[in-house]
Image (cartoon, rainbow, N blue to C red; front, side, top):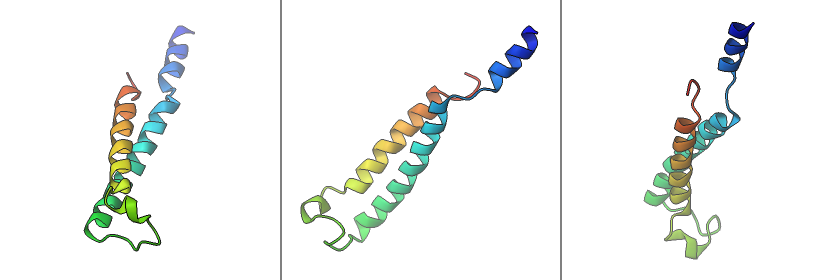
Length: 79
């Protein structure tokens, strides 16, 4: 009975691992979008004029990528 319980326990995945994967995916998408917007800024109707020089999409993407990477490594399966 103990062997079966161990197999079931090892098959469980942490929800934080999936959150990390999701944050990592969104972060990569935002970084790519932020780089594209850095080279070709959007119209002022899309982004407030005072935010244009700060490049919030790029920085938010970097932040999400970093947190997603940390969560994915910290809560990876088999750890």
